Length: 116
Image (cartoon, rainbow, N blue to C red; front, side, top):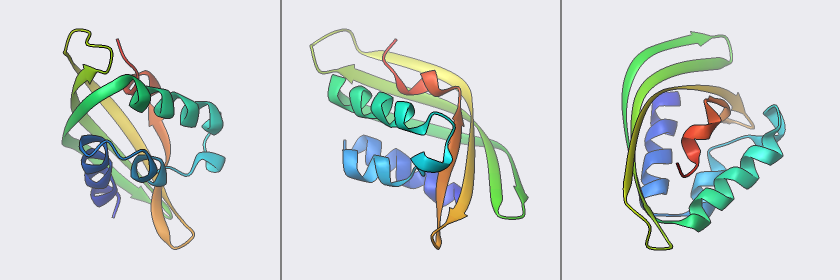
């Protein structure tokens, strides 16, 4: 369920597929979702390659929502030829079953999906 969604996100980022990355989020359900959508789109545009490694630390299901806290590491190569960067951070994903499938409805901190 939600952990499979996280795996889909990682594969979509690695494949640099904007359509697939955006498909794992339910932006209308998110606080400032359209702003986050724009952030993700810009992040993908500014990068040549992205690799996400996530180690699940905690998970909880509460009715129709699931929360996962992961130790995430992202390796990013900017499109403009800038320096390759790596960042590690604890990231919390909240997923909900909407329209018959699981999608992320929150990510904290959202700054994880931006260039340093």
